[in-house]
Amino acid sequence: MGFLGGLVSSGYFLPVLAATQTITGFLLLTGFAVPLALIILAPITLQIFLFHMFLTPGLSNLILPLLMGILHITAASAYWRLYRPLFSKGT
Image: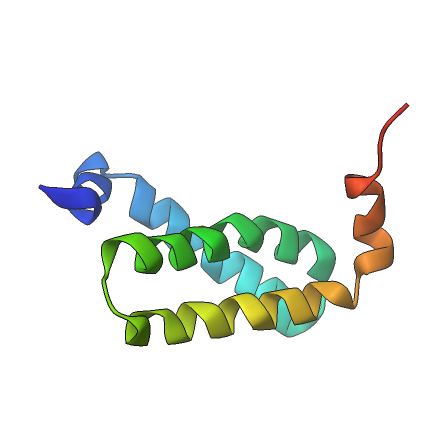
């Protein structure tokens, strides 16, 4: 069946993923709640990169996922002051 076949057969995963990407993309385009949208999209971006790294052989298949990761990091760096507490040791 394969990885994508399993996701499709679940019946819910791809619609939820598409809705999440559409909503967060809208938030990014409108400039509303951008830091939240970037946090929600971070694991999706990472999963896209890992999927192409491990399941689609060839360096040419990594070009777009690498570009996505670079753009995501660039966008998130503008909000680093908001993300810094997430990486600090809690008390």
